[in-house]
Image (cartoon, rainbow, N blue to C red):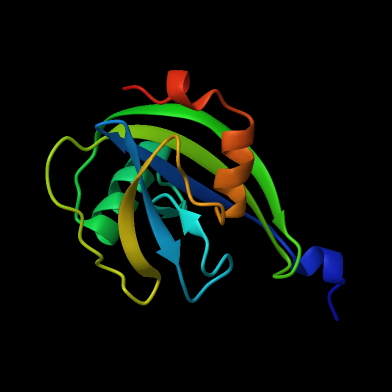
Length: 143
């Protein structure tokens, strides 16, 4: 029998901050940890995949938007106590200058919405909440 500490592992996530006309794109998560919190597009980094490739893939899969001009911003170290999950989340800022947002994974996301940086929802996904607490949002989020 394996030791409980050995069974648990840390996953790597990529979160993509898309800003358009001073607003950030957030989706309401469902069906996974952090259900009914608001998060950026993103997902798990796959073996051998670059952070940029993951960011492009996840945004396209989830929203139908194509991204460019990516800048790596930083990371968070997040432990989801209730779910017993631990993530290192890499944050990327990217442009998506055109196209309408589509909800291509309705089993994972209730809806996508653009929010003013001055009026974000209170129930943010843990990694996003931690990242925003460590940043000067208005000066950092320009591509």
